[in-house]
Amino acid sequence: MRVGSASLAGFGRKNAASVVASVVLLAVVLWMAQLSVHEVRATSDLSDHTQDVRLALAALSQSLLKMETGQRGFLLTGQDAYLEPYNAGAASLDGQLRELQQLISDNDQQARRLRDLQPLVAERRAQLDRGLELRHDDGIDAAIGFIQRGHGIATMNDVFSTLATLSAEEERLLIERKQQEQASLQRNFYLIVTLFILAVLLLLMMLFRVQREMAARAEAVRELDEVNATLAESTAGKTRFLSAASHDLRQPLHSLSLLNAALSGQLLSAPAQAIVAAQKDSVDAMSCLVNRLLNISMIESGVIQTHVEDVSLEGLLTSLQVEFSPQARARQLQLEVQPSSEAVRTDPTLLREIVQNLVANAIRYTARGHVCVRARRDGEVVTLEVSDTGRGIPEDQLERIFEEFHQIRVGNQEPREGFGLGLSIVNRLTRLLDIPIGVSSRLGKGTTFTLKLEAAVASLQTVKPPVWSAPGIARAGRILLVDDEVAVRNATALFLTMDGHEVKSAGSPEEALSIVRQWDQSPDVIVSDFQLNATVNGAELIEELRELRHREIPAIVLSGDTMKVTPRCASIAACRVFHKPVDAEELSTHIRKVLDGAAA
Image (tube, rainbow, N blue to C red):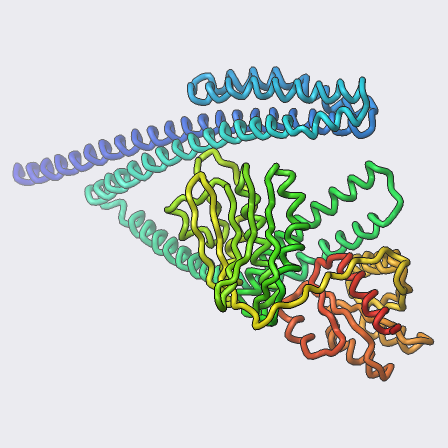
């Protein structure tokens, strides 16, 4: 009996020890869980504080933008109603600065940045007040002259740069705190799991939990594998996506470009003309970015075909001088394009794209001095050189400058310029044309890019580019326009009509055939979209219309899908392909050239 009692007592002691050990382990687990909750709560409070700071920074930026907007409206119209946003923004500035000062008072580094920001805000406020004063007292010309000196832009850039630095620092602090929280949570997690496993071994009550956790981990691994597979497919489909999206990206830009061109030809007031010109600049900028992204896709996909011929450099260099002189003057740079009578053998369009990107890059990264473009012949090679006196390229970045989206940044505070695509396109096109490209640079002194071109057998005479005729000067014609998208069709028809032509529009191939059958005379030119969402595309429709009229009607294909249209239309005679967004002047010039040729 005593043995049994001893056994029971031993069992009880072991059981009690197991229970005590389990309770201790559970208590430690609960304590650590509580610590983790406190850490999460503290991090959440810090995150809320960071968010408050960023919202205050955004509010300060919004107030400054309101003041800019109000000043701009008052300058343009002289009406006091436009001063309401200006006064609202000005009334908020002091309170917002005080709120920021309170929020970041615990961070000496941020407080120093705020002290640097305050005189900049005061200076910008004084500049805006001065512009309003000049507009009120001396008129719009005096105010605009004051603004065009550029002091306000420089000050505003400094303000926004400081605001961005403050916001970036708050973001960095938030990331650092979350990383600390994550490390603590991960450490506590592993310890808690270990203690739970020990408790399970002691009480034999945690087997189900362990099994469920293992199953959950297996499911997480499976989901991770699926995500990785999805990402791999997404990466592989990048080029396909760009190609498929090109049509939808180009369509609204195409409509905007033609509507802008139609509007610019009207008799408008000076402010309206300025707005139309600014609108054109924005459309051109959007078109440039879309074209650059899609050009990369086209090159990678092998769509771009080279057309090698003898090219005179004189016309190219002259057009570069005209194109980039305004940009150089705006940055107070000297653009020196040395004339040359040399000729090279290459694709003229792609060569122009290469040199345009090099010159644009040189102007963008040159703060003072000059940009020089020159060509010299050495035997069978013509060296085309683009040099600048800009910031130069650090040696450790020379091998990366031709990568997509890579930008040269010497300092951490240096602002981002452009999109980092120009040199990537240059690299692809030089490889496509088999043109050796070299680069030499000295930090702080400048950079020189050199292209080694095959010299033509003989020099060529430069053919001056045609001058675009104003509407109504050259011969107008009968134009059949086919496009399945109403907005694009209406914009194109409006532009062609205002350019002086008789336009009949069709929304489908069937409607186009019906119009031509009922038309007493054949159309002089067919302008058709390529992708008509019908059983036939634009190229096939042109061939049907020609067969219907038994004549080779000159045709123009407009398309946003360069992957399909270029090879399909290459075999069609008297057919020109324009990729959307179309340059309105180039389209008008080509149509009038076709009409003048038909008349002759």
